Amino acid sequence: MSDRDAFLAAIVGRPDDDLPRLIYADYLDERGESERAEFIRLQCAAARGDTVPPGRIAELEAQHRAKWLAPLGDGVYHAEFHRGFPQHLVMGAREFVRDADAIRSHTPLRGIALLGASRVLARLLAEPHLAGLTALHFTGGMLGDAGIERLAECPHLAGIRTLRLGLNEIGDAGASALALSPFLGQLRLLVLSQNAIGDAGAWDLARAPHLGHLTALDLSENEVSPMSLAMLQNSPWLENLAELHADNQRSSSRWRLIVGV
Image (cartoon, rainbow, N blue to C red; front, side, top):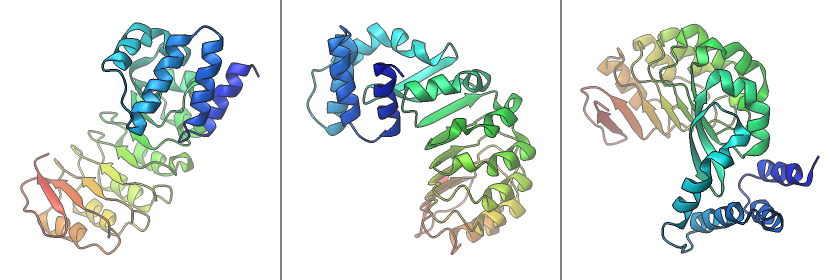
């Protein structure tokens, strides 16, 4: 392992700690990569709430973004830098499966939106490519109930806090699989909009044994009745649910029901 690889491994292994990032910035300075070092230091400072030169972070990123993203392969459509490194990516699922080892070794990735995941879902879930992530977006992936059932059985989702599954042809079976998954215990936000979930799926979600930390649930543009929404509202299993997105329903004092979102 090279010195650079060792520094990156420390950053990936301690994603919440600024110290490995700042040590790496010193290493980059010694190698003449002063712009990258400055960018890391400035973004870390900004994340701490310190004052940084106006516009300098954006200027550095605009000048060097392509070069800094190059080690992640050619499949990245969008990236959000945080504390000096790409933290959230939007990319093709096929390319992510192909380049996952390089991506996960080069940046402390926390969230990813994957396009076309249905075509490589088995390969994606078979390897620990998603381990340690906190946000996962499959919006528009058309995974169907079968795909969602496979997703719900993946142990690598154990740290996920945000899961977006809008527009995925999910019915009651898929909703039930999510409700029963033992790997979604850390979930805070679950988006299931624009699917085909009915009362049976909603009732299973209301009785989900592992979703006690869930604070927001989006069921807009589904087929859930007011009675089932009331069941979700009063569920003792969803004791932390504070927001429910649905259509044409009234809000309650316990949680906010956001209409038509």
